[in-house]
Amino acid sequence: MTMFRNILAAVDLGDQETSTKVIDGALEVFSNGDTLHVITVVPDYGLSIVGTFFPKGHESELIEHAQTELHAFTAKTVPEGTPLQHVIAHGSIYEEIIRAANKLKVDLIVMGSHRPALEDYLLGPNAARVMRHADQSVLVVRN
Image (cartoon, rainbow, N blue to C red):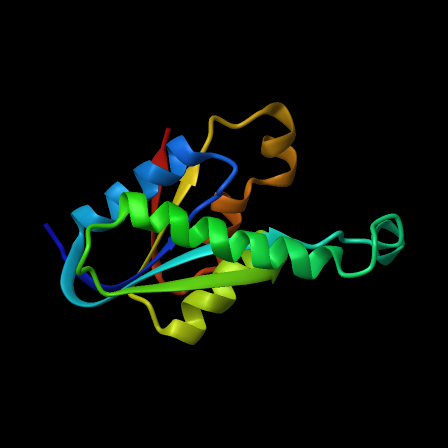
């Protein structure tokens, strides 16, 4: 089995079950020599008008909350002593995963996927977009 030294594991903190499987999958192929980067993306609103419906500072509070939740999640799922970096991104999910993968120079992206709904066949889920556009290998873990 191929081992990877520098892995980006993309987790959705709203889906703990799938995210735990993503971490498990990443750890299976992780060569404990470099770093396991765990990323979560706080989506942006897409349209700036939508942001006007939320109180000032709402997005920064979401990012701070995501930071706290990500640390708590990895404390439960990543074995102590594993070289680990937490990454919080804000924006388009698939674009931020690809941006982080390139910036961190990872060998592999590990992410979860769900059974596609009808709209996913038309629009493409984040996992499919990452697979199509990433320069790195992508391991998709199904729940």
